[in-house]
View 1: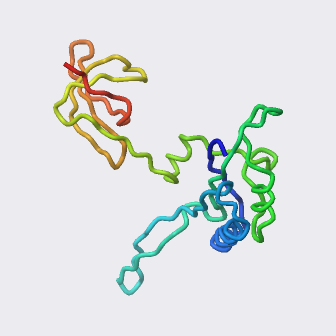
View 2: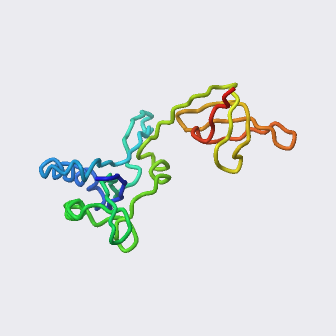
View 3: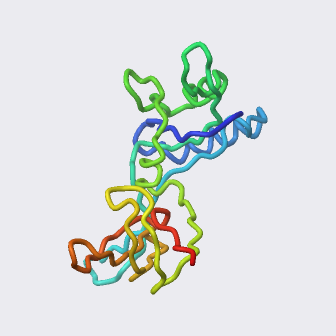
Length: 185
């Protein structure tokens, strides 16, 4: 496989775990680890306060009725698109509890990289080669080629705040960690 993309699979409500487990079992049995790479059900931990005043931590599904599947894809010269294999499509589509793929006319459409990051499916790690107080140059976006001083770095949220001089004023701007690079002397 050349690449991998995340797809969203629609399931009957309450069947998300069964669908995910069944897909994983079929992948192991048919040795399809190169085609179906990962199966996820995005969840969050929520603290509930009951009527008697006791608190309880509960795991909730972020997208009830949906399972995310990372599939190996290849370039189809006939259509000019990146596609999953027919075997992977068949296995997922015929898993008990699956109603279909999410996409126009139930045609599978992979999630964009922005959607994957926004949904928290995959965390990208950006290596930061600068620290607070360093002079950096903005690379990309509306402030491209501006230079400024790093004011704050938030690695967990992928944000850096840089103070730039704009129209004679010190202006703080927030950017992605990968949108700035250190200015080398």
